[in-house]
Image 1 (cartoon, rainbow, N blue to C red):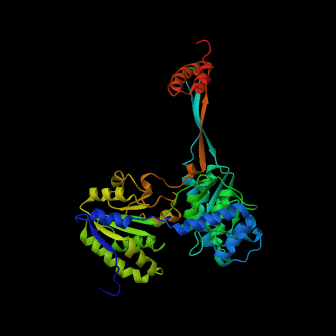
Image 2 (image 1 turned 30 degrees about the vertical axis):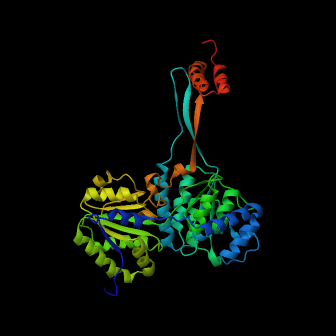
Image 3 (image 1 turned 180 degrees about the vertical axis):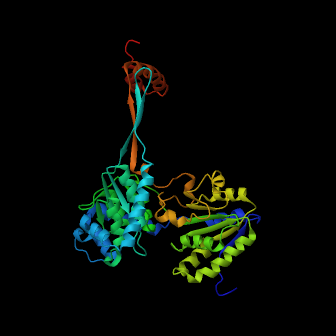
Length: 438
């Protein structure tokens, strides 16, 4: 082995134990620690009973702050505007460009209310209503994520949410102006510099200073994920997010260094992130592996990438394009890159993926920041039944039923028979009252 050797698994679908090895590689359960769950429950209970005082106490302890009251953990609109106006021109323009693209994309998602009238005059339909208040959790600590602010808050704003409340941890009191500027651009109404389970609890139950919300969205660490699971039912949540994932499919024609960097782009998030390459050209997989070893020492987050690739990464050789599709749908990746000659045709066979990046020039990173579609995506195989965050996550639907006298009689006879079949006579008589003389 050379000094630059990278310990990344090499798998082949021809191996007898391929299925077992793939299952082991994909295994992830991020909210399973009993001690974490107990600690989170303690924090939630404290916030429910003591409100602001508990939020301040845990924020001071866990984020090394010295706040005396909530005013020191609250940022107003003027501070957000100041952050935006104070950015270097290039950053301000890039942030505004990304925000506009994200807004335009999500405006196309906005559903409309509808209704129709039946022959007897009865009206049926659906009424779409935005949530009153949404809570946006933005990670802090190791890194700052202004893109996360845009991706969570802009769909809520487009949906028509009346108030958007953002929480963001600021360990040691360090504020990030890009994050605050993004909040200004995205139309956030309240910003509180708190994080962790205490922030989720405050959003779910409300405190003297932090308003109670209807839904909590946004990624966080294991404490945030555990808290979101614990408060679900009291409020809505978007999803329980696991580590970031990328699955790249290559037909052997894309520059190996491009693919190596695409894998790095997700592996650098943290040691638990997952980067997998699938292809049917063995020589090309070797070339990508060589590019990984050549480029990795040049990366600022080399140690994180190296650990991610060693623990959860893989280069998988399959027989052909059809077998690659089988692997895609088995993994149901958060991010899927189809770095092939005819990505549109291949995408037709993809049934499970959070976001599909098609063609050699469509790097996944463009979706992280500015392509337009949301980067809050289902992880850990949940793309089998979940979708990206969108406008629809900040709206709810009410059914509309308006019966004419004739419609009430027609439906009443059917309802009466079914209700009596269930021995629910009050149901039946309620329907029968409106049968009239028919």
